[in-house]
Image (cartoon, rainbow, N blue to C red; front, side, top):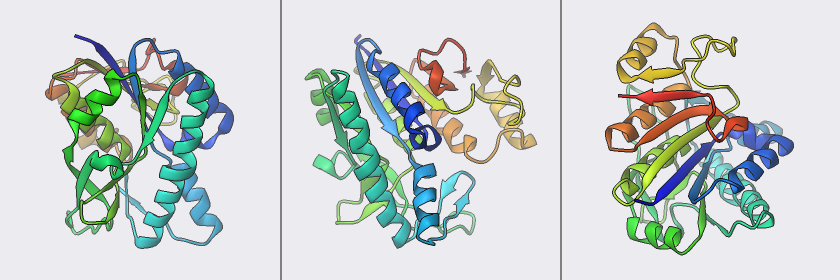
Amino acid sequence: MKKLTIIKVGGKIIKDPDVRNHFIKNFSIIVGYKMLIHGGGAVLDEFAKGINVETKVVNGRRITTEKILKLAVMIYAGLINKEIVSKLQSFGINAIGFTGADADIIRSSMRLVRNNVNYGLVGDIQKINVHLLNKLINNGYTIVFAPITHDGEGQLLNTNADSIAGEVSKILVCNYDIRLVYCLDKNGVLVDETDENSIIKELSYVDFQKYKKDGAISRGMLPKLENAFSALFSGVKEVVITCASDINCQNGTYLKL
């Protein structure tokens, strides 16, 4: 079975041009089929602050108002996505940038109120065009996904990039031997966020539930790990949480069932 490396990279890495360019260069030399899903929350926060637009995140997930959605589309699907695509082209990678709305490749439904939290214009993935994904990959394109989807009725939706990485991995698992890598500004999953040496080298689902209950793993790491374990349960061969500078996964946190 052909190998496919799916990388999700976070907004803090995207925000720093030097770190981002170093990451993209390392991504470009990955052998075989590859795909990149990017966030951009740190950049959005910076833009929002500059124009006095309030931002709010609950349990690692962004509350998306109409103003925030407009910023997200401009920054994620426009500025960040096209900067990444153009940089990959300079490294000889034939990259193509997508939102879920393009070619109806990822369709979502607006998230319902959960635990008395109204997330606003946030999309939960319902359908992925696997035929088109396979066609693009097999024709040599490196897909770069921005975290924007649509509902099929003209409404764009902000969708967690970790979720896109996980769901795309799950739907392609029958066609490829997949390695799913979540790249952070940390060395992996840490027991203590302030101590880079407190990395968990191997994390089982049972241990994840214990850390979650104790509060050692919280905030933005929760949706990341929930999506990562869901991918493992669905047959993805390997899932790693690691630092963006360690894209080849020499270290990091390896997940197991």
